Image (cartoon, rainbow, N blue to C red; front, side, top):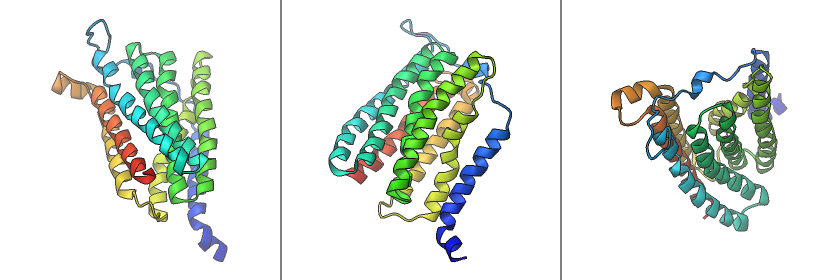
Length: 253
């Protein structure tokens, strides 16, 4: 009973991990809905199709660049594992700007690889950093290494299954959404001397708004006419990663 009381937080997190993995395993394979590639704003400017969705990725390049510069300070002041997570996080942000622009220039399953791959770097590195700061340094580092590897594999596995006509997004969905379940529990269970829980809440609010704008892409474009929900989604997502940059700027400097 003493052991259970001592380690119940870890037990709960592992239980959530296992239950989520088992639930996805028993779901039928999830193919990529081709309607996903049909965005509401198809306007062409300066010869660039989907111009607004393409150009709204520029903020990712800016935040990614300043974040990569920040990672140099992490290299000097933090452990190698921490440096790698910060570096991968902002490399992911930078290449999300490039990959998402490439995808929106010509949306299809192949170009979607270049959008999702760098986003996977962002998700896994950010989740690893939270575990590192709030739970345990070693657990955070190894969680990052594991999820980073599985995350990259999940992208190519998904695309391979699409090619053979049996599209399966389940593993990618697990990598993207398991942290959404786990992070609130981590913030509830663990206290940290870093104390950036409030800043994380702001990040998640911005990310939630981004997902809502993505979901209501067409309706927002119909109302506003000058900008679509997906374009606004990019801006809210870039704002979320800027808030993340501020967290680690204060944490490292």
